[in-house]
Length: 249
Length: 249
Image (cartoon, rainbow over all chains, first blue to last red; front, side):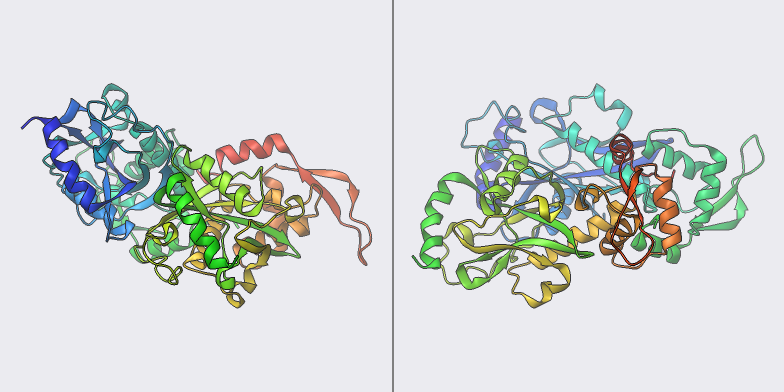
C-alpha cells in the first residue's frame, strides 16, 4: 500500500474518532554526547520528518490525548509532558497535504498544543507507527539538515526557549542524566539547554547552593586526569525545589 | 428578548463563523488598593460571571482571535496577551448550558486556550457586550463570593501561578503601576502577585540591582511621614531585562 493510500484510509476513521481542528505535538528532548536531541518521526508520506503528533479523541481529556498520541506514534510511555505553547496560525499546515483534496481529515486547519518532556534517551525505546518509516533522535544542531515539515521547527524552537526560561528558576532536566553524574556532566547539560558556555567556578558554586545534590563516595574512573566526584540528586530537596521554584524574591 | 433566546439566536451565526471545539479566555489582571483584581463579565443568562472569552473565527489566527474576543466582549483594546495554559478536560463546560439541547453551538465540548495580561485599570475602559449585564474588575480575594461559571476559577488560578513564576525571572507587571511610583508601591505589587509579604530591605536592594528603575527628582507629597522618592522605569533596560530574563546562570 502506498503512503498516500494509507493516509486516505485513515481519514474516515479519524473523522469518527477525533475532534476536528485540534492537534497535539509532543517535543521530547534527550541529552547525549553533551548535546540536546529531539524525538522525530519520518513519515512514509513524502519522507518528511515531523514531531510524533496527533489528534484528540472526542471522549478523552487533552492531557490523556497527548500521552496516548506519543504512545501511538512513537511507542513511548510513562513520560511526563508539560504544555508550553499553542500554534494557531490559520495557514500553518496549508501546504503539507497538498496531494489531497479538502475532504481529507488531516488537511483541515489545526490548532496544535505543544507539550515538552525531558528524557534520558537510553530509558526510552521508541517504535514507529505504521504511517512512519522510522522514529529517531535528531540532534538540535542537525535539524536544519533534515526536511522538517510544516511549522514543526518553530515548535521545537519554542519548546527550547521554554526550557531555557524554566531552568533559570527551577531545577529541571535532571532526568536527562544518568543516576550518577559528575558536576562537569551537569554543567554540559545546562550549557546545552542555555546554548552558551558557563563559568565553571560560578556554576559549581550556584548548583551546590541549591542543596539538591548528594555527593557520593565514588569517583568516575578511567579518565586521564584526577577522577572526578560523582553526585546524585537529593530527591526530597529536588521535589521541594521544583515546587517552589528558585525564586529571587 | 430574554437571555436564553439571545443565546439561541447567536448559535446559528456562530456555526457559520467559528471553528468548533476551540475557545480562548483572556485573564486581565489589574492592580488597585494594593490588591490584584481580574476583569470579568456578568452574563444576562443565569446572571453568572465568566472571563470575557469567546471563539476563534475560521479565517483568523489564534493570536488575532483572542484580541478580537477581548474587544468584542469587554470593549478592551491594545492589550498584550500571553498564552499561559490550555484547559482541555472533556467535561469542563458540561453543566453550563444545560437549559439547551445539543444542537447549540455553545454547548459542544470546547478546549480553551488561556491568555493573560497585566494592566492598570485606570487605563482601560471596559464595555459589556449585548450578552452581558456588566463587565467589572473583581478583586481576587472576592472571587469565592461570586458565581464564577464552569472552570473559570481554575483558569484564573493557573494564570496567577504563571505570573508568580514569571516574576521570579523577569520584570513583569510594571504596567499595572502608574508612571511614577514609590518603592513601597512596587513592593506591594510584588507582594500581591507572590501572595506573601517580602522583607523591605531585601526587596529594595534586589529591585535596585536590576537596574531597571530611574530615581526621579520628585517625592510623593501629602503623607504623614517623610515624603518617599518617586521612581519610573528605565524603558531601555526594562526591555532588555524582559528579553533576557533575570537568569540565575
